[in-house]
Structure formats: C-alpha cells, structure tokens
Image (tube, rainbow, N blue to C red; front, side):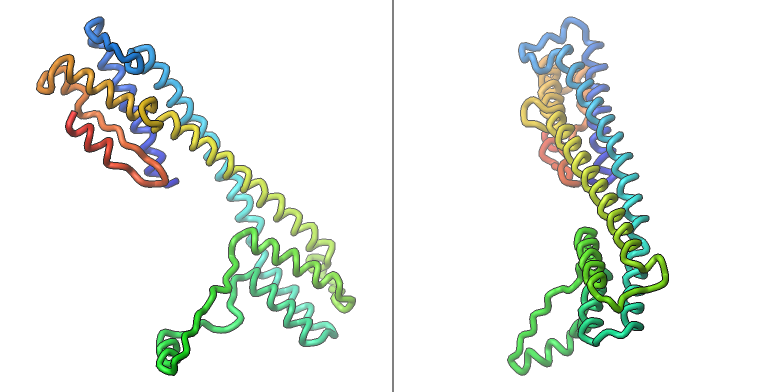
Amino acid sequence: MAKNSESGHAKNVANFSSLISVIKGFGAVYNPSNQSVTVENLEALAQNATNSLSLVNGVLGSNSIAIAARKEAIKPLSKLSTRILNSLRSSDVTKQIVDSAQSLVRKIQGQRATKKLTAEQKEALKAEGIVKKEVSSSQMSIDSRIESFDKLIQFVSGIPQYAPNEIELQVSTLTNYNNTLKTVNNDAREADTELNNTRIARNEILYTETTGLVDVATAAKMYIKSLFGASSPKYKQVSGLRFKVITNNKISNDVFIANQAT
C-alpha cells in the first residue's frame, strides 16, 4: 500500500482524536442513546485504532528490512548464471547441453529466446492472414528466478565435464548460495504476509461497516448536528473533520461526500 494511503489512515485516527476532544468539551449535554458514540466507546475505539497503526508501522519496518536483504542477496544472480553458462561452454560438452543450460539462464535473467516482433512485422503477418500471438517469456518473479537457478544447478551437477576450478562456480558453492536465496525469499514472503495481516486487522478497526472508526465518527457527527443544529458554532467545530475509507490504495469518496453534508 502506498505511503500516502498509510498517512491517510493516520489522518483518520488523528481526526477521530480531535473529534473526541471536541465532544468531551461539550460536557454532560453530549448524551447519545447510541452506545457506539458514547465518549467511553469513542475513546476505546481510538485506542484500538492507534494500536493498530503502531503495529502496522512496526511490521512495515521489518518488512522493508526483509525485502532489502532479499534484493541484496539476489543481485549477483544474473551475472553468476552467465558465468556458469560460459564455464560450461568452455568445457567439452555438446551444443545441446549448452542450449539447455542457456534456456535456464534466459529464464533466470528474463530474456526472450527470440526477439519480439515489431508492430510492422505483426502487421505484415496479419496481411498474410497470420495472427502471431506472443507469450511473454520473461520470468522475473523472485520465485521463478530462484526455481530456474535451482534447475540450473541440478543440471550442471549431472554433467561430469562441468568441473570449474573457481570456487564460486563449483556446485557446492552454488548450492549454498541457492539455499541463501531460498531463505531470504521465504523471510520476505513471511514478512509480507505478516504485513498484510496487520493491515487487514487495522482496516477492520477503521472501516468495518457500522462499527468501524469512520462510520462511528460519522454517526457521532450526525448526533452533534441533531443536538446543536447544522449552523451552530459547536457543530462547526466538527463539521470540517473528514474521514475517508481507504482500501487497496484507493480512497472512497462515499464517506467524504456524506461528511460534506453533515
């Protein structure tokens, strides 16, 4: 989720705290029959929302560290796979073996086996009644790259001629590096899952229909409007507080429009 969306959640919580502060200033006259907008419930909800933001922020940090570690670990992969291929080419192996290894290296590096057709070439084929459908050969997801690298290691380990003197190209070293890639990738995946779960929990607190912070804030504003009137100075203290539903990097205007009318 984008940084501006993260700040949007925090803005909702900050505005909710401001709403509570104004409401507490009303004193005993603020006495709603709806228990969800009593001061006690508002304060409890505000605390839960604040805690959920803090939890997401903490997990965001660990998630960033895990992603950075994976990014750093995978940096040498493309060049290393090229060196493996060149080492294999320099040994006494058949062209078929080299071609098979090269196919795996292409997948590791996200290269196409053949050049992509130009727009002109596609039009020329179309004029001849030939519709050429091209499927992207790029397999640049982390999982796909690591899987292809694992296959490359297994492939060269079964070739007797592949016996480089360079330690970094030897099968045992490659295997250790591959295990490291799998570990950091798994760590990043778990960190991403944890982040998603904490965001889901936060969103439930903030945006669940009726009981979430945004809907409760709107209900409280409506009660204040009914209590003092739309043109009253007391209502104007809260009428400018905006609460927006934010999900999947998008901000819903539904609540914003409703608040404009309250």
